[in-house]
Image 1: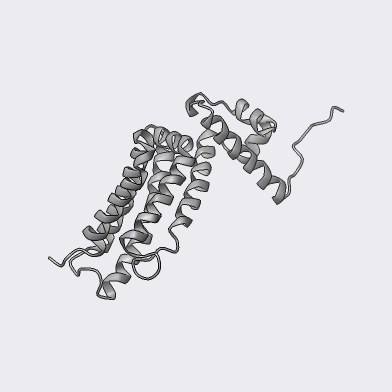
Image 2: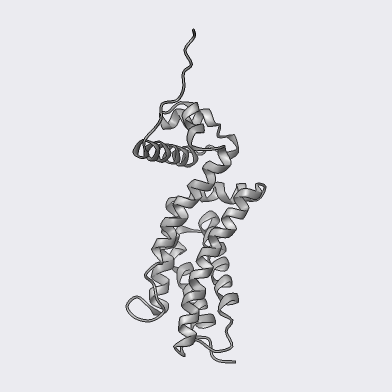
Length: 209
């Protein structure tokens, strides 16, 4: 009776290692200049040092791969601003400028992946929905901080935290992504400062109307 070859079960460590290999391989290929639309599963698997069948054990398709790659980047980017507060050490427009500088550097370090996500979101509803939800996480965090500032009497009472938080998150992400895509790296600090000052005086310390 002919034997049937089945993929051997993998433990959590092996699964995590395989996923990490695929994510790292995909980013290497993107950095090397291969457009995501031209990146086949076979080439990704070969770069990762795994079989094509192993790829499909962990990813439904390339869309899921990109979503998970985006998630790993966004988690790290989200963590950059986790400890920032408008008041206290690192607060104020100078602290916000420093935070945006770190974010811009991170975007530059992973520019090829972010470009692929932006491109794919233009035609793939799943990627677009995921990316929108991820930006929503940044907006929710801004809303919490703005609400805290308003309760403490430091934020103008006529500011709507929900609307302002969404504007901060979406506007900041759009400016940084555009600058990293076509801007001069020598202007990174100027862009970070402009973002910080406009948000600080336009929202965090906006005069009461």
